[in-house]
Amino acid sequence: MSKTEKRRQTILGIVSGGDANVEALSRHFGVSESTIRRDLAELALDGRIVRTYGGAALLHGQGHEPSLDERMQLRSGQKDAIARLAARQVQAGDSLILDAGTTTAALARRLAGRGQLHVVTNNISALPTLLREEGIELTVLGGSVRRLSMGTIGPLAELMLGRISVNKVFLGADGLAAGRGLCEATQEQAALKSRMLAQASEIYVLADASKLGYTGQQAWTPLERPWTLITDAGASAEQLALFRADPLVTVLVAVDGA
Figure (cartoon, rainbow, N blue to C red):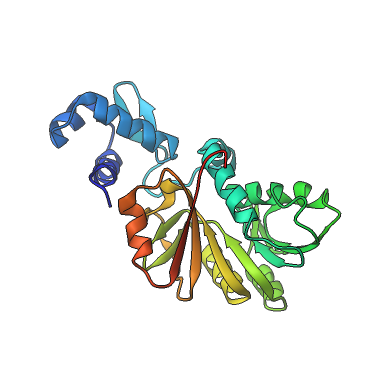
């Protein structure tokens, strides 16, 4: 983890204790106020804090999960770049599991023209896009609707997955830690992702740079087989080094506009 990311993680801890102001944070870290303002701007862009007059505060306490509308506005360019690169991993005739989330929904928009596909998904936001494509055979996982992420979860979704196998799975996550796996807000989400992993031959995780190294949620899905990380060009060398050092991981970096 870079010095900047370590400082930002520490800032999150300070802000969790109450409002924090730029001047006090500048003194605490021995850096300029403009550096702290950049840190706070990035943390706000990631949806981890809200800016206040002269400082910052947590949105709704530690472990806050941004709403779907909030996430759709965050890093949209990076997510689209990741989606374009992910779509290039799909060939005609493939069967896919498409996880819930905004980056996987961006991938759904990039599947047009990829040939005949079978897509299995719990991503309600992606359904209008997928339904427009005549070349896509679509299977929708049932279950309880989690409105915050607009995805289905629970035993019914897991039961359906147990009857299906696919070539590839494309997963999202709230956070991603090298050597550990995916972190999520709820155990139901983590359990469903584990089932998705078990039913796929190839594993892809779509995570922009803000997700790499983030461990702020409580539920985990281990990644214990070979898998591919697709992230954006904003990921630092320090962030990527941890994943590249893992023999199970292949790292692909998407470039905006490519």
